[in-house]
Length: 334
Image (cartoon, rainbow, N blue to C red; front, side, top):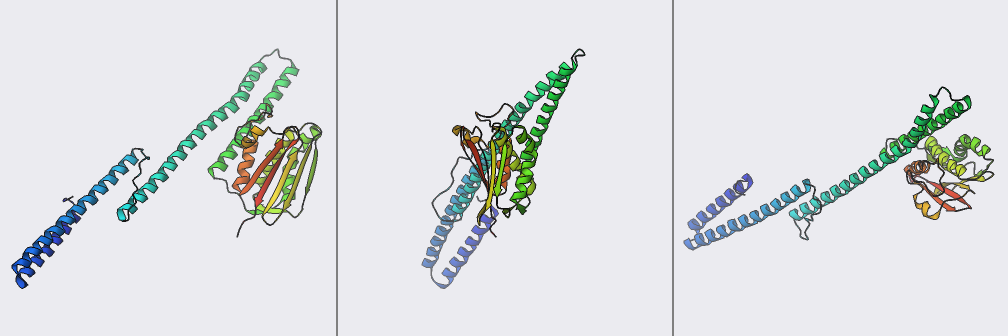
């Protein structure tokens, strides 16, 4: 404490003031006044030293607390219920500690998510890769007849297209999660949006002889990104097509009100089990009614795209009756 230059200067000033006070008391008053002045000066200097020592002890405790934080111990609570600059400093240090704790927890969770994602991706790629390796080996057989060769070649093409879609979807999801995608804020007419989303699915719907019913206000619109919202709708409608039997019906309705623009996509397919509903937007989740070719990434991407545009998506379903997706894209408050 005494090695601190500030303390040395402070004590020197106090001693100088005391000496001047004692000299003036002896010169102008009396010897008794000098004794009293000496006593008062000693008490003041002693109390100052005690108070300074206490402050240094408190600062030393805070230093030890910070050292423990740097070693990774975030469980200590340094706060107190007193007023003063030291108490304010303790509170600020505690707030920083809490923030570091939360950041550490988030980093740990992100690391766990990354590990799980890598595991899921490797699992999703392993099956088609294994299948392709087997078929490639079979295609090397010179005695393989043309029909089998054509079948294996077609299967290879299917697996390659599946892998291409999976990798492309994962890249898009990664960009959305990382916040590197800039969603445009432009006027989007829902009627045009729905037509763009339906167009690539008309052939699968025709093959399954499914009917499509589109109803809505032609003037309905919202502020958002046309291309990315189309991507979201394609994934939702594709899910409905895949889970609806031949001869089924897909319906799309849209409307606009002063608060939000709503798009409802429904089917009369096999529906989603009640226990699966809370998890259908989770990446790589496959419910009880999911097909063998399902990856569990389309609805997760749709959810990310909608929510990143300050929208909301809900799903209701009854097994054996059908499923309904309700998308709400809220108006921007100016």
